[in-house]
Length: 132
Image (cartoon, rainbow, N blue to C red; front, side, top):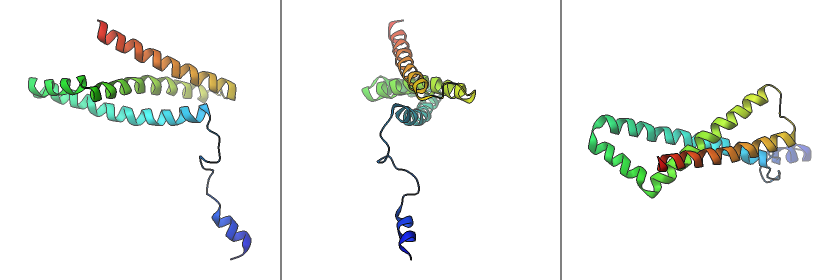
């Protein structure tokens, strides 16, 4: 094998995270994927709720006691944040499909607005859930 082929074979196939400086937009992209996973897990909890409600009072009370536990509350909080973030970020992607907001400054501002709106909507939802 020649030196050029040897060097070429040792190069990575694509740039790795160690090469790039972390950016807001890449972090938001990773968060979008993570919230997609969280939504899938949260959907399993919704299925559990529906099955428990159909199975009778004992099963329903078991589900409700789990969601009232610290782990259940964290899971429900994460699921509600994931729902809002994934929805709003999906809307941003629809705007991108029209060719708008592609420059770096707009992408950063829109990403921060979506993150802030997701936090505010999650807080408002939890406030309403516990105060009405």
